Image (tube, rainbow, N blue to C red):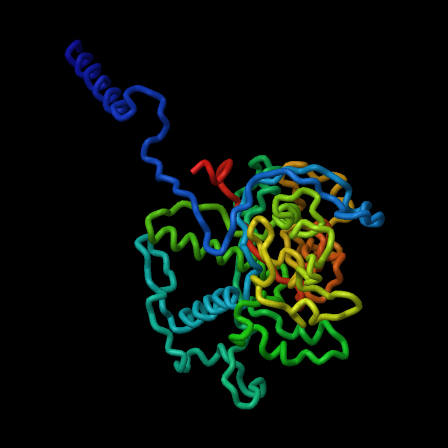
Length: 413
């Protein structure tokens, strides 16, 4: 019995000594954690954490009811230096197109866990009769052309309802908070005709999205759901690449900016600046217009663009962001409420509501910011709030993405 007790004590000592060998008996945390190198996203600029005063940018008495003065603080983030362009968005459209073709052609591979995934190494034979269903057929064909049916390009994205989960206190299963939605991804090119009565804009409908002349122009005809789907796809695209290089670390999600992230970025580090360039006027000292909008009573081409202009036209603001005023207005993730400034928090303020298709129209309002090529100067101001329905496409609304910065400051690296 004594010998058995001695053996047990020896084994216990060995086990304890082996457990603490790497840590030397000290509380040092888990030692085999992956290194975090940070991320420098292509085409994005860093916007550091800071504070700003939100509210009207000038003495706009009527707007004070929906834009009460308030001091807020914003966490640092990366933001696309331009609006998402036609060619950038086309990468998303082509990815959806190609994924459907691979599915039709049964191009799959099986992972070690038994899951079936699309094998992107396969070449797509676009002449294969199996893909005929992706094209317009019969009477839907125009002039005998073989054209892709844009209605077939549908992408399902998902998001996690963190607010609902936080207030549930763990009472419901996890799948209760996972939301999924399908969105058509091809831009609504007919907006160029629909938005303007008795106006000849058919050439823009036919050419704006696909013609190389407009590759570097901001994509339009995108509703809020399509922009959300793009952000989800962009996140998956980056995560897949990160795994191939052995990272495997989720660096936060690409997403639409909140209303006040957008306003903070637009001001370029200048508190109370009425415009991204900081001044009180839409012209410089030489009389040149500083953004693409509707000057005077409708002199559209005076600023250099009859419709939109290239996404990097004009000078950037002091954060390096182009066209935060004019060109196209931009979707934010924030739900629009007239009295939001009365009750939102002063730390990273934001209001969300995931409106369903059958919800009242008023529930579907999302904040848009920045004004566009067809708007007057009032909408160019950094503090001007406006909205549009989330399921509506327009020829003057686009978007850009942000990525939350993980850390206090980029200078910490």
